[in-house]
Amino acid sequence: MTLLHTILSARLLRNRIPAATPRAHGWPMDTVHTREDVLVGGHSLLGLATTRGTPAVLIHPAGHPERTGGSDAYVTLVITRVLAVAGDTRGALHVRVDGDMTEVTPDWAGSTVLGRPDAGSRAPASIETIGAAPLPGEVPQEIQAGDLLVVPCAGTIALATVRHHPATTPNERNSMETWTRCAK
Image 1 (cartoon, rainbow, N blue to C red):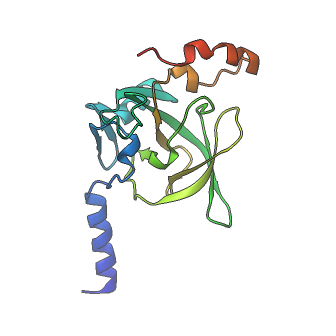
Image 2: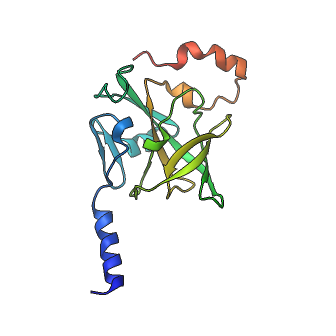
């Protein structure tokens, strides 16, 4: 067996096996990661983003309160579209997404890409969201502009919280805090 044959065989095998999800700590218990999609309680996140657009949210019971600190029984999965990706000389990425992540607590380390296999490798990143300073985080290393990025967030988050509201000022945005948390 040649070295090239070994490398090609390893790549084929890796693509056949669903990505291991060591980052499952931020995801609901009944989450199934497939090669190109994530199913949560039987709901396809790729299908949700396709039918509803981005950003989109899916609220689901956490299922394991010891992993969420017992403070909240729900996890919100925020699906955003990656608008731009740039790298720097240190290997860090600069990623811009279409969601407003300023009012949520994203678990960037638990994020995953939809629509293609996740290689599992992570890269430090500066994530720029609509109308906010860049947030430090960690994203899949193979991320590209146009990708759908799913980010688990603790608690219940209303869609209005992550949707960009170009007509609102920061003061109006603060007055909306009473309805930004979902009452689920």
